[in-house]
Every structure is written in C-alpha cells, then in structure tokens.
Length: 594
Image 1: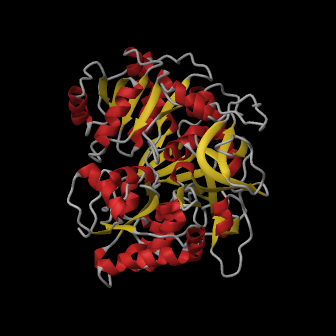
Image 2 (image 1 turned 90 degrees about the vertical axis):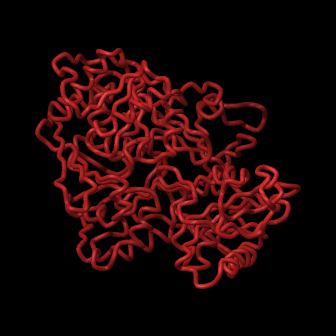
Image 3 (image 1 turned 180 degrees about the horizontal axis):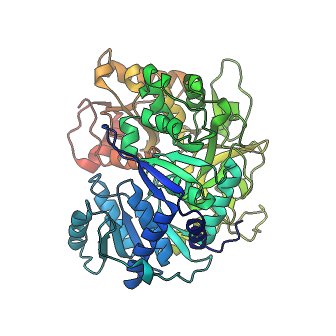
C-alpha cells in the first residue's frame, strides 16, 4: 500500500513533482483530424485548484457533486477538482447524449443528494433547464470550461482521512437498479496498488482507452491509475471507437500505449470492422496488457484476435483476462504479466451440475477462460443457499474480502448487511466473523485460477438443469450469418413450468431465407445441441438488446421488458402459455407473427 493517506494527497504530490509532464492526451472525435489535446500535470493542478475553490466557497466539501461531461479533458479536471475540494465526485452519463439517460441521471441526482453539478459550456444551458424542471433550484451548476469563476489562490487543502469518500460509483445495473457504490480514499488507494501489482505498471506506463469516463474501468483504470503511477494516458471517446474501431488500435501504435482494454465485445468489434488495409498500417508491439474484463471472457475472441492481429505485433501473452466490479472498486484478479491466458475445456453436463470434469468424446463441452489469480483479496467459492464454502473444482457464488471492497451502497443499510457483510457457515449452525462481499457472480477455483462462469441471478433453470445464457446465445448466433453480428438475450419465464425465451437481433439485409425459417433453425439447433425445448424465439432489430455501459447484456431487464410486452419483434413464435403471460400484461391481440 502507498504511504499516502488519501488519493488527494497523492495527486497533489504528483502534480507538484511532474508539472510539465503530459498527464493526458485526448483525441477528439473528428474524422478531419483535429489536433490532439494535451493536459500536463501542472495544468491539471491549476484547473483543479480553481474548481476546488469554487466548490469550497459553495459548501460542497464533504458533499456530493454530480459530473456530467462528454468524454474529454474537462471531466478529468472536474474530478480532480472534487478531490481538491474534499467533495465526493459522482460521475454519471451525460443526459443529452442519450435521451434514455435523463430518467437514470435524475434518479442519481436525487439519490446522491448532489450539492452541485459540474459540466461544460456546451451542455450547461440544457443541464440548468433540466435542474429547474426537476425542482432542484438549490443545486448550483457550473460550466468548468468558462472563465471568471474560482480563485486558485483561495483554495485550501481539505482535511481528509482514509475513510472519507472519494467518489460514488453508480453501477450500470446488469441485473438490478443502479446503486451508488461508496468508494473511500482507502479503497481507491488499495485497488490502484492491486492494479499496479497485477499488470506490472510503473511511471513509464502509458494507458490508452475509449471507455466512458463515468464507467469504473474507464475512470479507475484509464484515468486514476495513470495519476496514481505518475504516468500518462491517451484517451478517446466511446463514440469515436464505435464509429471507427481501428482508431483505438491506431492510437496504441501512435502513442506507444502499453496497457489498455475493454469488454469482450470491443475485441469482437475490431475483428469485424478493421479491414486488411487498416491492419497493414497498425503497430501493436508496445501493447503489454490488453485487458478483457467481460464475464465470462470468450476463448474464441482471444484466439481470433490474437491470430488476426499478430502480424501487427500483437503477442499471445498480451491478453490480460481479469475480473472485478464496482463493489471491489475495480480489479479482483488478473492474468500474471507475460503469461498466456489459461483456458480449460470442461464437460457441459458436469458444469450444469456444479462441478468441473474433463470433456467426453462426442458430448457437449465448454471452454472456460481463467480470469487470473488474486493477491490482494481473499476469495472463496460459496454455496449461495447454505453459505458453506465449496471445494476446489465446484461451482458457487464468488465471495471476496479485502481493503478494496467498498463500504457499501449509498443509503442502503439493509442491502449492505446482506451483500457486504455476509458470513460463511460451518454447516453446524456456526458462522465466521462476516465481512464478505457477495458478488452475485458464479465461478470456480481450479489450480489457483479463478474462472467466472456466469451471473447467479441470470442462471437459466429449465427441467432442473442449470444453463448458462452465454452458451445458448453463442449457439443461436452460430446458426446463420444474419445472427452472427447481433446481440442476444436468453432468459426463463414461468407458467406451470419453466420456459426458455430467446431474443436475438437479426440483420435483415443478410438473411438468405425468410425469418420463419431462421427462427425454426434456432429452435432446431437448441433442441439438437442442448437437448432442451426452445419454443419461444423473438427475432428483433439491431440495437434492441439492452446493455450496460461496459457492454454486458442486461438479461434481467430484457426479461422484464418481454413480460411487459415492450419488445417489438420482426418475427416471433411463442408457446401459448408464454403468450398468455405477455397478453395478460399488455392486453394486446394474441397474434403469432408480427
């Protein structure tokens, strides 16, 4: 652990020692090639003092401050300004970028009890109007790229302890409503230390990424870890990456990025969208750790990406499968630097039964990718019903304990007792001292490696079998090229029994047959390969499947939308009992094909 007591102390030391050094370089989302924007440690210090003085003047010390910015350097200045003020930063998605975020951000604003909102000049008028409409006239709003506010000379260093909150990280909610994770300065310093140890980073490390700054990996991994190290980062916006994925890879070569990554889908997108001509101009030889934090990580993606980009200097040992979440600040485990990802072939039937077994000839199997090893946490695999620890090679809920585990969710004491203070049972009525975080993820330990197998709440139980949605979704997407590039969501609903429901995006321009035949093919494959009935298939337009900011499928939300009749299919086939569930909720006409 670092000798600094708070992250604010650390940043003050870094900015003092590294004044002229570039802390961040931001590449604007401009196809015409706008010049990269640079922010030195000295400039960051001056801007943070100015913002910090404005916040201190308005009594925001110890209070929550909502940050609403597009990706760019202004967000970084504002976040560090909150640290300097002793305020609690609350990063959130900019409502004006996607209309669906207005309701979400309104909920965050009220839940966090924000004292002020920081934004930029381009969005300030709309943000101010939104605050007025929400009846929040007492919440100050500041465009931090404007002039004439704050006095860097009037700023005073706040009196903070390690237990003070550094920020609230509102989770994107793959299975539940967003909640504000309370990350203390102690938690943050502990996890940045864990990240440094895991990836082998130092002051010469250059990070490079495109993840949203309000996302835990984008914030803690790509912004705060460089500050922790006294290093630097090259950054771009998610929009820039999604429009032109090769720009991310080009940035890695241009700025000699050594560490950076994203969810599994980012690598899949590069595989689909980077042309041979673009590949020929790439240099990925500086890349030392390509983080992949999806749950679970896909072996097919690792293999295909490594093969495709090896001519550009990408090495097999560069992939860094890892595991973490907002509740642990960020990282829990990762693949040791310089080693290739560990993959493990297992028997599918045994995995469904809750344990590992070697694959059998001519029987279904699954390839698991290890999320690495852990050094700064105590991790156990636990039966989620009995709370007893499960032996090595057995599947259960992942429980974790360590200095990086957050203190809980903001204003959720009952939930915190259940999730952040669980106790292991000895099976005889006794329990340990507690303090375990229940992650909600399913996993297994084998030879010191942690394998994440799925989400506890998303496990599909059909005919007494425990099925993993990702396995079924991959099988569906393999049936036709029109489904291969789309996202899917698989879940179960109940009448007098369990029913499997498949919602899959389809690109109609790629369909070589009619949608009815396509849906029938999906049903046949699931019945043949997984030996389960798939009587409910909805083929939908691209973009229908809801995801978190990190690209995780929101299966629980998709299930809720389905039961409310709020999914509009291009084609659907439903069993009568399932159709009745939806019809009861919507009173819509009972038609088979829409």
